[in-house]
Image 1 (cartoon, one colour):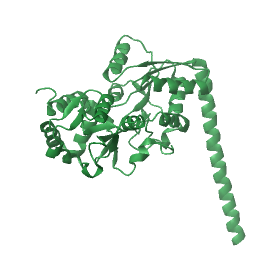
Image 2: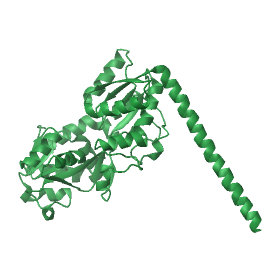
Image 3: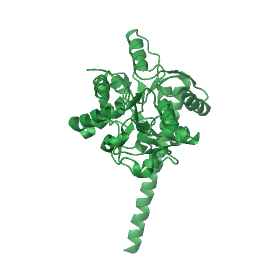
Image 4: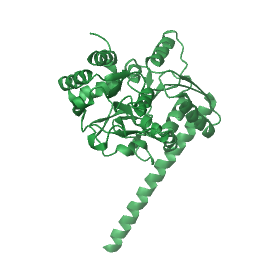
Length: 343
């Protein structure tokens, strides 16, 4: 009986090992076929909202790995990049292969049918909420939204424990916030509900909250003491400022919104195989580790030294990209609640 059990166990292990070998061999053949097809295309055009220097580092690394592909990229922020893509389409010009953009803007391209399905083999390593079920997009990098404070002006004992603690009279005239925090606002509203979120943001308005445009500027002003607390900031902004000697620190308020950052392929890509190869590289462990070295937070589960690990004990909620459908309405509502514009 023992000999039979051992024989069956050995047979089962052999079958399992054989299946693994076939799977790996099949993936290797698929990768080889993709590389050969991309070699014939020779080019890749990347449209992105990523900072120029970061995009250059990413593309340079990709070209080093695949020297037969020449890359070019165009950088624009927010709606400007979406408008360019829409205008090119109307003119019958299909120029770009891959798109990535922080925030909710990419939803418009998905809704309007610009994106191709591509279930990259690297997608399985990404957390839920950072990829769609159909294979249209995956998070290139996410951006944790955290609060931040000036360590010289606020002690850790004084820090607010939740968003509504910010409405305490002791913070009046001492808070700062970006005038374009639409993605964060839309997610907070969805989580808290319309009534509770309205109470929160109308309360911030009565706190004489200082509103400026640009989180980098706000982080500088926080370090200079113009604000005691920034209600919302990007984690990497605080990390960068701290390394430069600024007396700033982050803290978390529940929940922490992980901003969207989808990467996707053009349905009419002029170089579709190069596009797939680039997406695979960006989502690979190698590509994600490179982004982490640029202080970006990865949604991939096997990356070491990830900035997001610094807040792993907080309640992290992935931004709902579908909120991009009501982006204009949310932007208007956010600015009205804070008194930036009149109703």
